[in-house]
Image (cartoon, rainbow, N blue to C red; front, top):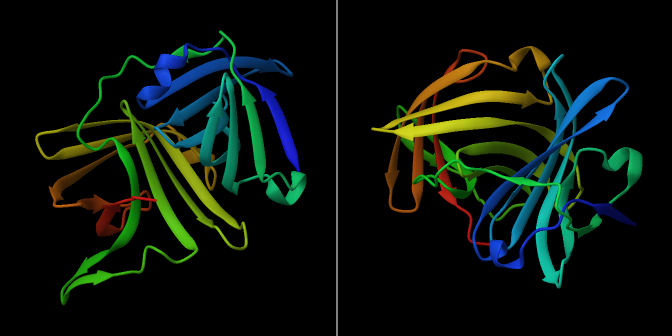
Length: 218
């Protein structure tokens, strides 16, 4: 099933680089933020309300481009049980505003690859269908947990972040599992070790953690 959305024109040269775009709409007196994060082949669309905090939907996958039309083969869709959508066709118009945040060293797609324990690193197979992915671009971040075979969606959260002097800080703008987490600021220590990102601190529940994320190549 295809879902055609008019999203906002934009100059074709912008697609040679990763970007974040945002616009707002109104529904029942509430302002909905629409955000699209993309790199050269992957796109994530998310909709949420800031006040009062409410998560609406997220969906994303690999895309191809022809003229100003983008065909997205979804890997996840938080509304799939309701709408059965697995393919999006996006036509761009001029209502989208490009992010102004500068690129920083964690930009890209990352897959949860394991954890550090007292016994050392415990790695997981990142090629399996059940994935937890973080997509970071131009100071924005989003994590998504999903299954590419069953199309199950397990949760997402995101907002904006900074990464300076070994400190990575998340500012949560939406969270599908608990709207009360919106507004929280979570600092972590981080380091890049080859293709791995080591991420250490406390989870949104306050539990200590030391995660290993690795760059997604496909």
